[in-house]
Length: 586
Ligand code: FES
Image 1 (cartoon, rainbow, N blue to C red):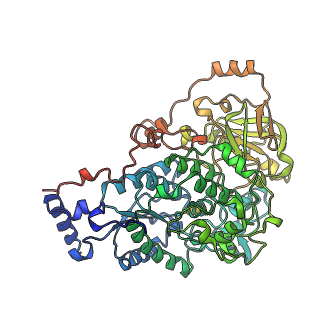
Image 2 (image 1 turned 135 degrees about the vertical axis):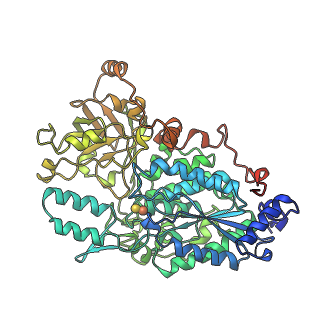
Image 3 (image 1 turned 60 degrees about the vertical axis):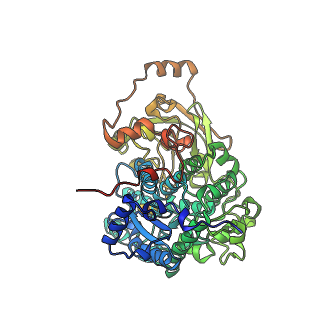
């Protein structure tokens, strides 16, 4: 039997349990909040990191869910303490939530370190909130359980099912091409997001919450439950109950994270044909645990992982359908030997034990391996003289004719340059051209989701819907197209992407995993010598910190000083106790 902690061994005991001046302060201030001593004495203090805010539509229900989590914590004999943290609202935060992912990761870690937390419930779902909370919790290494926001219900407009993001891009292109009216567009606006929950296509949110479940961080099946479903609320109560037990058992992230559980999460992302953003986030998450996940490992796993989730943008359905079809447990069970079932999860059981009895109820939504949506390679890692440290593409989201393609580059030096010229009638561009965007990488501007570069209006009107597009940006997981992303090193730091000029021939060969510009080494050396370092975008504050410390996409865009093994990479679960604090004297 596993040894259980005693109340005196709880981390919070140093705050509440001692008979000294400091503890007097903590207890008197807890009394000030209306608690009796017997409500918390000797109980695990459970921090609830809540990313709710009035600007995050995906987390609208977190105000209610946190009460359900607290209910579970009280029932199991814990003491809940809700702590609000950065909300990272994908549609609203500029220039990109990616700029702030590491901010939330730091905030999560430092909040846990500096307060009397014995365990933590991580409440996230909207894109970057999931990796950020996991990164912070992994670095702090206290017992941690993840509560996924759950997908919103299917969108609907005039009887047409709408998917988040994907249908925004699709109908925006149709509006620009003149095939739908402004009234249609307004109708779509009203029907595309009609309930609480995160994007219900296989975007970054659905990909990363599923990855969190496959890593072992959620109760089984939780990531697939739609946000408004009563079973989501029930699972929140169970999450609260479970974290209290995890504290007594001392079940920590370091007990869950292994090369095997990371591979399980990667396999999951690929079988879902998930967002390319998962590459950056999973590398960052794994590296926080000291596991060296590489781009090449993604490519290796992709080559033997079939796509089983028939979900947009690669497939036809949405997350609500996925849940009714059996959800993630059914998909993981169907993956068979591709999943390492021996890995531990937050409920104390192995992933394999959690998959027992899982069934597919609709095998068009969750495909059998014999009828996979794609046999393999939902993601490909490209290398060549344009991306020596790698780039990624989602072949299933591109028109097949473009996967082996050579075309003339049309280069935009930054986003504003592209916005100003892309629809210019005089722009020298045709459907075989390769659109290139520079200065959109992690150091330049926090790596926004600009990678699905727009197709010029004049080509849209000719019926062109896909072209090869290359950038050091990311792309929303709800996007599609022959978009080569995450080019590393980025152009802002002098990577080869900075040297491409309009008119250069660019060769993309996805089956061969190649991305090259057909320019001689001598000419590239000449251009490199003439390259002028751009002026940094941020002169002060968090932006300047980000710019100075963010690593390239192939290393997960984490800050160099937050990596395990770095100069300040303390992952001591009791760090900071010595600073628990004198009571303030005014
Ligand atoms: Fe929150 Fe898409 S906007 S997940």
